[in-house]
Amino acid sequence: SILPICIPLSQKTVMHGERELPIREYLERRQHDFVIKSSYSAQGRDVHVGRYTGREEWRDLLRAAIGSDKWTAQQYCESLEFLAYDKV
Image (cartoon, rainbow, N blue to C red; front, side, top):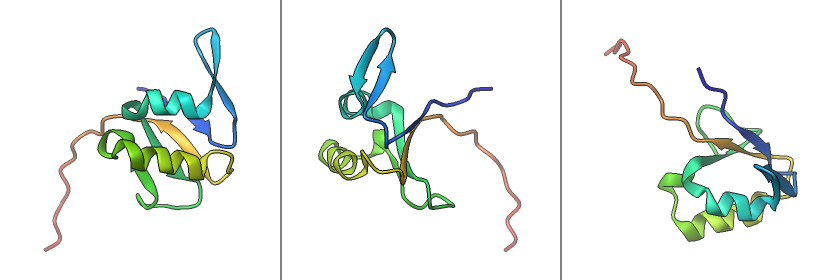
């Protein structure tokens, strides 16, 4: 099992190995590795997957979200395929 990295976007910096980086720089460099999520939404609302978001849109999102306690960056994890019963 894996526990994804979670970073509150209220933080200004993040440790990357031995280096401390500004959080915006870190998340711009690793856009395809992260998801930005609202802490106050549920059921997939207000979730922005870096690998499926355009670069400019991602930057705009970071500008709006960084410094706020309402947003979290979470490491992207592939989901498993599930078969579900269809009630139709």
